[in-house]
Amino acid sequence: MTQLFLPYRGFCARKGMQMKEVVLEDVDISKALADYITTHHIHNIVVGASNRNALTRKFRNPDVPTCLMKSAPEYCAVYVIYKGKAITVRAAKGPAPANGIPPRQFPVPESPHRLPDQGEGSVRNPFSKGSWRGHIPPSPRSDRSLEAFHGHIKTPSRDRPLSTAKTAPSDALLEYLDSSVRPPRSSFSRDSSDEIDLTKSMDFQAMDFGHLTDPSSASPESPSSAGQRDIEAEMKRLRLELKQTMEMYNTACKEATIAKQKAKELQEEARKFEERKHAEEAALALVEMEKAKCRAAIEAAEAAQRIAELEAQKRLKAERKAKREAEEKKRALDALAHSDVRYRKYSIEEIKAATSYFTESLKIGEGGYGPVYRACLDHTPVAIKVLSPDASQGRKQFQQEVEVLSCIRHPNMVLLLGACPEYGCLVYEYMENGSLEDRLFRRGGTAAMPWGVRFKIAAEVATGLLFLHQTKPEPLVHRDLKPANILLDRNYVAKISDVGLARLVPASVADEVTQYRMTSTAGTFCYIDPEYQQTGMLGTKSDVYSLGILLLQMVTARSPMGLTHHVERAVEEGKIEEVLDPALQDWPAQEALDFARLALRCAELRRRDRPDLASVVLPELNRFRNLALAHDAALPSCR
Image (cartoon, rainbow, N blue to C red; front, side, top):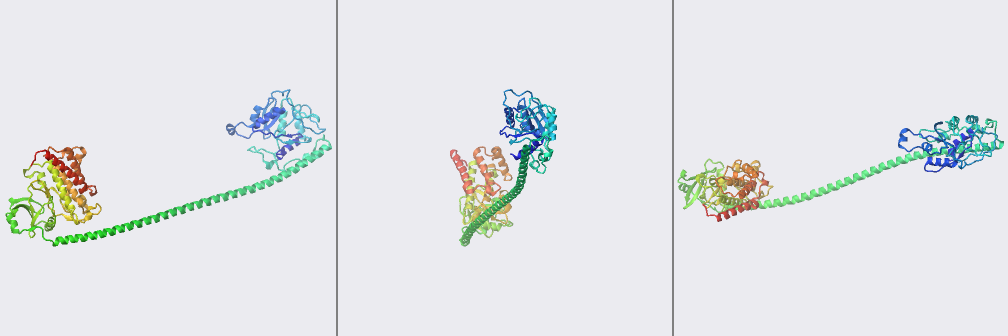
């Protein structure tokens, strides 16, 4: 704190003025100054202006000079200086109170030099600490400045302390403040940030104290020799202190520079350390990610190995099963080939005699295989199917049908009574009501079948078809199921015929995934499974599609061409009665709708969308048959 006031001591010494340093401690600077002025009856106070622009003054609290201009007593004149000039002056508006406390007195050494006694005054620095001891003779400039405003400030005598003048400041006082308060540029200046540049203000070489030590430069009215010695001693002490202060300051600057450099180095090291730390963390994270990927790859490889082992086991089991089934099939076929013939062989003469040499009057039908005749053999009505000489694949179909029908027996399969292998003639049991196609379209003027009979026939056809699908050792697919191949006996019991296109397929066709591939399709166009027709993949559900078309014809008595589209649209629009067989007027509406929906499900284009014959289709058809039987039991029997 002592070093801070060294420049101001020099200023006052050059002016021949006494000064006293006072340090005020308070949070509010302007309030502390106002209280000090009031307590000590200060008549004049000089403060520095705040270096702030209009923008900072708008957003910040008022500065010290502004607050002091408002809070200082009226008897105190306030001078605000900036860059050595008084920029604001608030003149005293009245005298000090009579009962005020007089200002503190401090001794002044005896000196023959006296200021003009036209007025009294004192200059106090509220920011100074300590005291300036001894009288400093004023310089010639100081004498001229003081003479300029005599009548306002007068120097007190040796025995009387300095007191505050009672008169208001004048232009002479302002001129004196302007000339005396402005410090030398080489020793003290205010920068743009309103801070003291200690490097400039404490420059020992720039300080001008020569006139203080040179006795010849003093006024003719010099103090006593004792006072001169005290002043010289004090000045020497001040020079020494200032020199030491400058050395300390230079040392502090060097240390600050070194510390700043070290701080920068430490910051750089810290930054590099953080970078290395982040890089290490990133590397560790990358390593962890690679470890996780490696673990995932190992787990995936282990899982793939387990799956491969399971697939190998499944494949081995499938191969063993296929081998076992192939052996069973071979044994069954060998047994069938070497077994005794299960049908009666007729000669061609017996066939000709029974058909009256194939007369047209006994002809009851015509198919792709050949004509069908009604005859009587062994006093039993029979139907004889004769192979046409120009029928392609006829011999193969004949052999296939003989092999199939001679090995199976079922109430819903037509019975093979015998055959003439040399001429390709097949002898069946005679079915009095002909084919289902003839009855649906009422050929020969027959009456329309009741809906109950139709439901019963549908269940019987599905039963016979399921029997073919469940044959051992391998399922049998009919491939040509249609109303023309469904025969009806005298009691309208349905029996499936024309199994010449039937095909033995591997047992795996029951699975929806694996199917048996045929090189060429066979069957009637509108009844062929679309997937079988496109891909040649044959399965038991190929017959389910044909069954669906057959069921739709049973309730509509319409041609199969585009039938699924018409029925589906009628079901969606709730107009199923518009597509039902108009020959019947007593259709049960709900049962007919359910029957049509089941038929549409069987006729789905994709095989996987069709229901299972054993678990879904046949139980539903049996329900319809039981409903028909219950209805017939409640009504008189109709033929």
